[in-house]
Image (spheres, helix red, strand yellow):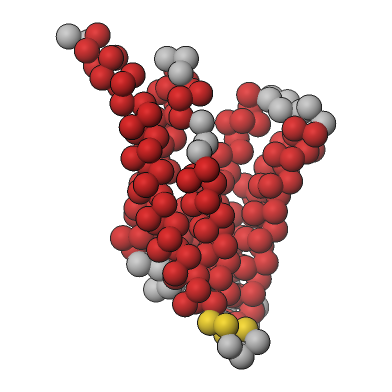
Amino acid sequence: MPFNIPILLTWLRVALIPLVVGVFYLPPSMLLHGDQNLVATLVFIVAAVTDWFDGFLARRWNQTSAFGAFLDPVADKLMVAGALLVLVQLDRVNAVLAFIIIGREITISALREWMAQIGASKSVAVSSIGKIKTAAQMTAIPLLLYHEVIFGAIDTHVWGEKLLWLACVLTVWSMFYYLRLAWPLIKEKAGNLH
């Protein structure tokens, strides 16, 4: 397993996931409710920044690796799934939305793994729809974690909910986009089984 700064940042992101969730289980004597929101939001933002930064550094310093390519999306999906589950428990996110987003991630991860096994991973490379979906999702989650009104006018819950609905629509759209790209190969491989 290679060890460099980009991989260290990815491991840091993995380590931050339990903090985002765990903050909400601390007793009020340790952290007040409003402070829980703020701390969870800040930890999630730090984790999201490491996501961008580790990829940037890996490319810049030519330190990309097969292990980094494996660990990075796993860390991203764990981060999103952990945050969404805690938001469902806090009744800030509809469970159906969380299920759609997490279900899509599992489906596309399995599809990418299968495509890589048959040597066709480029067929399901990240699309611009996927990038917009990720941006909407990574903006919505901290807004929903913060769950306060800022500057006396901006209700972060309302905006977070709108962005998460947008992310959900793009999630379904991008899933069908990837499946459509992969469908000829799926049919071909299924045909070879008969």
